[in-house]
Length: 329
Image (cartoon, rainbow, N blue to C red; front, side):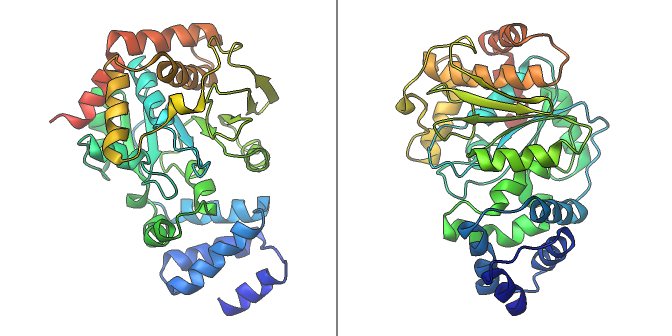
């Protein structure tokens, strides 16, 4: 590791093969915490290259625990995190709204490293027990049209660096990798990104693959459609800027989508929204993200049609039923 660090400190970058090899060795516990922290810090001081991202991703996917759910006609809605905005769990809520429409979802998530409550935190607080076998995940998918994959159970590398990420409390390149390494390999992925530079790297990487992807970025820095300002949306055909009005809503204030100060508060906000007790602003941001995820599948029509489906899912209680199918035994 010492030679690798010296190489990187001299402003060099890794090839795809080198990046894959070193992350594989990190996953195998070949380096101590100080060495790994130093390595991670390099990518806090400069941007990751496309080759490095491809190599790190290849390592995680190669080492991942394989999961076959019998279909890949699945949606994943996920964000990089690390935007420092402390919103409530918008992408996770949007996932349940999508599930309530009948579209199956394989949502991957993790504990928050730089936020109070990641998707794993909030679902655990609501009573969900993490699962890592196909039978249980298939059963969840059948009952509620959604299953949840707690990333460390499927990725040894993420498990091994989990305590380190938490102690750093900073956005690392693992935030970038998480959305790219769902072991189910769903057909449809909507990824929220915290800055435009990351969005472009993702776009270059995902355009090489034959999958339907959508990247969303709020221009005021959120890794999701926040409706606090304009948003830029990328797919394999290019990029477009949308206002809140373009998406059928009014602009909201940043404080209207705050995630609270504790995991308990985050979980209560989550449940309130699904139970129909959310504010107009909370509902709007969740519905906009869910509608775009549905539109990304190209199966449900235009955005307005998808928004109507999302609204019906929330209003009818079908989204809540999907949550209950997961957490109530």
